[in-house]
Amino acid sequence: MSTHRPTGVLLVQLGTPDAPTSKALRRYLREFLSDPRVVDINPWLWKPLLYTIILTFRPRKSAALYRRVWTEEGSPLRVYTEAQTEGVAARLGDAYRVTHAMVLGTPTIAERLDELEAAGCEEIVVLPLYPQYSSATTASVLDRIALWSKNRRNLPTLHFVRSFPDHPAYIEALRQSVVETGIEPTVEAPLLMSFHGIPKRYADTGDPYPEECERTAAAVAASLGLADDAWQVVYQSRFGPETWLQPYADETVEELPEEGITSVSVATFSFVADCLETIDEIGRELRESFEEAGGEHYVRVPCINASDAACDAFAQIVRETLGR
Image (cartoon, rainbow, N blue to C red):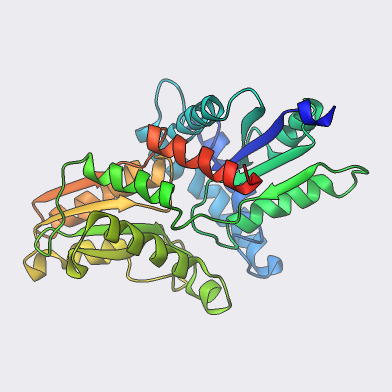
């Protein structure tokens, strides 16, 4: 009888606040910045700073930024994740039950695993939508799965996709996203491949994230036939005074006009769905930094979102994980 039961598929994203308000952002940031995978500072030092300073002043500022990107349907990240879920479900067919969850906010991983189990899924594939593995992101998903499973007598068979930094179908989706913008990267008009940063000490103590980012970048460059001097890896979204992975995206674009480069394009290959960091930080803030430094032509490459190539890639990764 078990052969007729659906196979569960859980796509997992980082998460998004429920609304672009100070109250919603305070709740979201409290959960996010309380995760020891994200901030591994001694809690006796970190918690007073978090509750007295950061959660007092940061939510209002963050809410204003979210209002810039919020749509009638809601948060872009949520909208695209829901569309990706529908796209993957359409490709996998009725033998699968496909849903999504958020590490932060709702729907939670535990809620979705409960639903898949209630639907009769004895086998579940968990696909974190983080192409490159990091302890700050991918491992946090595993933590929540472990917490869900802690007191359960009978667990389903779980398949966990660790990462897919240079999976051919994923790279093809990235290649198409670049081609569809119409850009042709050269040494005079390079392509910056921007990845979300992590503290440098994470990498120094074993986090493989930068190596996986380099694998993604090299694979995309090869797929596009780019010359070595027509592209560069940079890192964005650093937070606090600690040294993060370098080169920094903002410093890089400010230096390019001094080198005579006034045209640049930027792609965000650690994100599979457009969100605050891609739309506002890269699409607005980084553009402004480039133009204020003397840049003239700036192009942001959209994320793969729910494109046919993206949904094809996620469905293929699921099938391969199951050996089907």
